[in-house]
Image 1 (cartoon, rainbow, N blue to C red):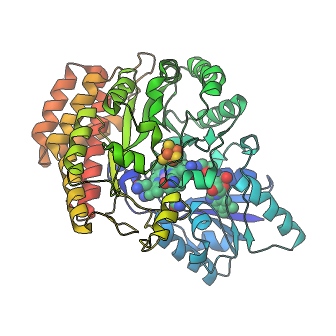
Image 2 (cartoon, helix red, strand yellow; image 1 turned 90 degrees about the vertical axis):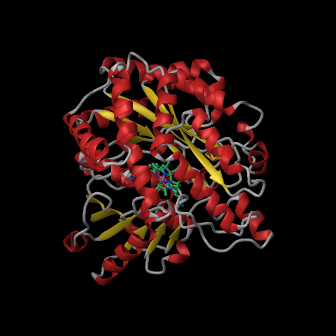
Image 3 (cartoon, rainbow, N blue to C red; image 1 turned 60 degrees about the vertical axis):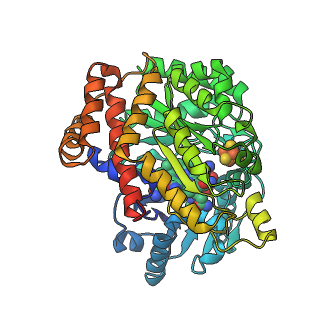
Amino acid sequence: MKILLVNPDSPGTFWSFRNALRFISKKASLPPLGLLTVAAILPKEWEKRLVDMVATKLRDRDIRWADYVFITGMFIQRNSARQVIERCKKLGKPVVGGGPLFTSVPEEFTDVDHFVINEGEITLPEFLKDLEHGNTRRIYKTRQFADMKDSPAPLWELANMRYYACMCIQYSRGCPFNCDFCDVTTMFGHQMRTKSKQQILEELGGIYSTGYRGPVFVVDDNFIGNRTKLKQEILPAITEWMEKKKYPFSFNTQTSINLADDEDLMRLMVEAGFDCVFIGIESSDENSLRECNKVQNIGRNLVECIKKIQSFGMQVQGGFILGFDSDKGTIFENLIKFIQQSGIVTAMVGLLNAPKGTQLYKRLMQENRLLRNPTGDNTDFSMNFVPKMKYEDLVNGYRNVVKTIYSHKHYYERILTFLKNYKPSPKVKIRIHYQDVKAFIMSIWLLGIVNRGRFYYWKLIFWTMRRPRYFHMAVTLIIYGFHFRKVFETYGKI
Ligand code: B12
Ligand code: SF4
């Protein structure tokens, strides 16, 4: 059997890093981990090919080669997914759809032959069994959550590692919290399910043996959901492995803000090579936090917590939301102030949306305020419900927030605020590759000469020359800033 695995193309959104990737001659930020995991569940003897359309083109001859086309996707990829499905149908190839897009809105894809949705570790073996017996159904779904011990190591050999800026692994699924807008818990539940120490080391070994060295994103939605196992087992094992291999990777992940309460955990993470965490801060307003049930962010000085994590050696990236019912007209200025004070350089500010299945969706449905499904891109100025604040005021306020925080002045100021507080671990090596040198040279031309923000660029570069340990980080953040500005300009919004 020949299986073609397709990751549809995706527009250049906030997290695509598309405008930054060209500085380092990479085509995509991360490989499609879901498809590589699916590939590992398929029988060993089957032939498999991966086409990641974010990085390369899908050719008709790839489709013709296959017996089945397995397609994944997020909401944001739905247009490209539709085109791929249409091409497969024209060439007479059966399509199997799985992953978040097909799990959330299967009704939008009438041409898909089989939906193998929810967690592939459970639904795919069922489909494969039926395929063997020639009695397949159209939909394979489950309410159960997979045991992570059954999740195989991704088939890295299918991916062209040179396309990607970063690699990824998954340690856990689920999150103990219950934020009302979040579909992670709808999809993966509250119970933390984790892989074993052996699985994680095997996955790291798998990436290492491809020759890759550099950043690895641990894609968990809340890496610290089970702190005891992390502290006693997983992090010490990763540290030992990293020391033995001379720190070939650096890690970034997503956590909740209560990371700041646990100094041991922060120390262990930094020792293991973690240098960056994404945290959902959501709002600077306690009423809005209460409204969305972000209990872990309430009753604490959020700026102090962020600064504490930075001082332990981890950059904090933050997610922020505007459009809560509790948001008043002052929220915009307050949020700008908060973001500037915190030194969160990568601040993803988006408008609130209600994905299907979330508690927010249910509430808004009862209140008759729902308009449509979300576009899947929380920074494209769209909303799928009627907000309490006048929509025009909300959008204008939002535009002002992103325009301000991504202005050269504010952005570079934030980098400095962060770097002054950041104490990177001396253990983690900064590896300068050829591509980093190229990126720096390109940044000199584009951002230090051509671009309007050149004054701030040189000010920061001279500042870091006296503090070389921060140089690599500063240049990376400068290039990210170029991407973020372009994203918001492309939307035509700033
Ligand atoms: C890593 C990640 C990314 C990476 C994507 C890398 C890549 N090439 O895949 C990056 C950082 C680039 C990213 C970006 C974005 N992301 Co993202 N991301 C994730 C995250 C955290 C983990 C995904 C992952 O790798 N999981 C591990 C693998 C093993 O699981 P999986 O992919 O779900 O696959 C399993 C099953 O779904 C199934 N499966 C998957 N595909 C298929 C296919 C077939 C045929 C079958 C049978 C089974 C199957 O089997 C697998 C094993 O169980 C998820 C959250 C989550 N927990 O899933 C969000 C998530 C997927 N992202 C999301 C969003 C919204 C975005 C952005 C739009 C955010 C933004 N505003 O920019 C951008 C868009 C990207 C772009 N323009 O390029 C949403 C998608 C919601 C939806 N329903 O579509 C999620 C669910 C987070 C959330 N709740 O908001 N993301
Ligand atoms: S902490 Fe993050 S992953 Fe967990 S429920 Fe809240 S938004 Fe979702």
